[in-house]
Image 1 (cartoon, rainbow, N blue to C red):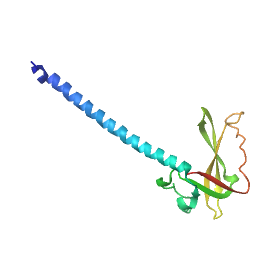
Image 2 (image 1 turned 90 degrees about the vertical axis):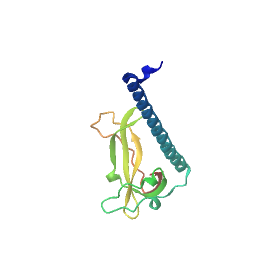
Image 3 (image 1 turned 120 degrees about the vertical axis):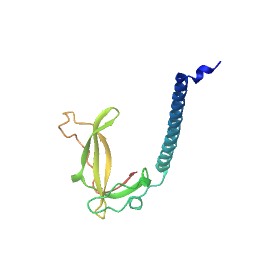
Image 4 (image 1 turned 90 degrees about the horizontal axis):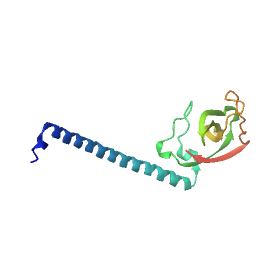
Amino acid sequence: MYRFLGTPRWVGVGLLMALVAGIMVALGCWQLHRFHERSDINARIDAASVATPVPAGHLLPAPAVGGGGAPPATTAWSRVMITGVYDREREILARGRTVGGRVGYEVLTPLRQGDGSAIVVDRGWIPPSEKGASVRPAVPPAPEGEVTVVGAV
């Protein structure tokens, strides 16, 4: 009665369905792994958002000659504080940053510490100049004198 299941066509369909089922199980395992990975990151961000900030020197490596490298991955989202003076002469604008559907600039200003090293501080987003992209927008000046900044790595 079920001899037709042994024909090459039905055997091929059965093998194809087994392959598709295996692929779906593998994709489900991948999604579950990705969920746990993302949950761990979110938990670290949530914990860091309420943690007491620590001096940047405790978490970040000492600057190397010619500039430092990226901070260790374990310090991501950690809250740090740094005290120094803004170096207005080396401030840059990063173009093409979108906020709320509008394209503008991120204001990046180095904060010089007492030992001469610096950390780049993202002072926020500003809209482009009304005169067009070729005209530098008005940037609010960085505070003068020594300041303490609290932020996330």
